[in-house]
Each structure stands twice: as C-alpha cells, then as structure tokens.
Length: 260
Image 1 (cartoon, rainbow, N blue to C red):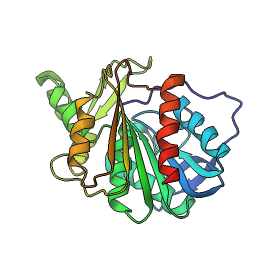
Image 2 (cartoon, rainbow, N blue to C red):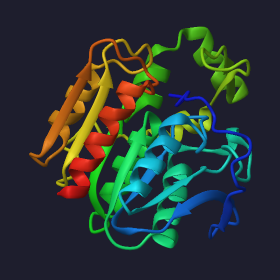
Image 3 (cartoon, rainbow, N blue to C red):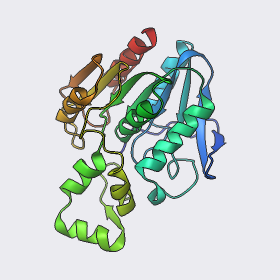
C-alpha cells in the first residue's frame, strides 16, 4: 500500500518534531492558514515528501488554508523502526498530530493506507473532520489484500518468524509485513459493517491500480453511512495517481470540500 510518489528535493527545510505520549518523535511540516485546514496522511512505508503531499501543500497554501503533513512512527524522519508499527499505532500517531498541531475542522486526505487511517480518524474525531478524500484508499488491506492473498508458505513463515520480507515494486528494499500488523489490523477492520462517517467523502481510484482493486472504492462508498459520497474512477490511473492530471483531480476534490 505504498504511496510511491517521487521524493521532494533534498534541499527541503528540516521538519519540526512532535513527541507523542508514548515517547515517539514524529517529524512534520505545518503551514498556517485559515480553516478548514488540510491534513495529508501517507501510505504504507511512504513518507511526507512524496509528490502528492508536497503538490497538495503548495496548492492549499496558495489558497490560504492551513496544511499539515507528517511521518508516522517508523516512516521517513520519525522515530522507531518500521516493523514496530501497526494500524492502531499509526492511527494513534495521526490522532496525536491532529489533536496537537491543528485547530478547528480539517479535511483529511489519505493515500492508500492513509485512506484507512483517515477513515479511522474520522470515526474517532467526528467533530474535527470537515471532509475526507481517499486516494486509492485501502481500508482493511492487511486482511483482504495481504493475508487473504498470501499462500500457505507465506502464512507459515509469518506465523513462525513474525515477519515477512517481500519484493517491492516501488523500492529496491523489500516490503516488510509483520504478524503484529496482520493481527492488529483485525482490530480496526471497517468494511464488515456500516462505516459511521457522515461528512462529505471523495474517493479517487485508478482502474489500473495493481495494489488496490478499483471495486474496493465502490464497496467503501456503499459502506459509508453518509450520502455525500462521490467516487472518481480514472480508467488509466495506477496506484500512485501522481501525474499532473491526477494531481489536478486531487486539487479539485480538495477545493470542493474546502468550499463546502
């Protein structure tokens, strides 16, 4: 569920740091501005320097709205090891960042795994969320797109070693999956029941996404309890959705929620 955008320039300014209640140090960039603000939530094993995060930051700042992007623990410039993370811990990082670093209503923009995190935040903080944009949103991916797709040998390796390293399409480094991630993910599954979110939701999904089947966006739209849910299918879109055209679609979706 990696948000495999190209990294930003290495000359980018150093991030600020937030220390969480459990002692983790989260790196972040925050821009002041008017409400509602926008919070970008990245993907699995991604960081806040990707194309979508930085392009959206520039767009939102130009409109005069507040913007926050950050790295979960084990990602980017934040503390901890990636394999120590779980969906619950990354959700808690997002809640800590939003609770501490933002004021008033926020539009959450979640890419891939970040879409799942955004949904969990919206459920936990309904009074703080003005709208939500999912980019190839992947709720329940640990169960439905990982565990369900693993063969018996991979499941046995996970059970024995508690960690599995798989070839990555997006990096020379292997993609790491832990049994803790799988087991904890089961505590945060959303698609088995109605999702209690009633703010406007916009789901952007590539139909040529090799990681997240586009039908998942339709399932998620059906599960969300609110009626103001729109799905944009991009026929030739991949998982990244970071071309100039894709970024324009994203900016328009966010603009619509900021106006609302």
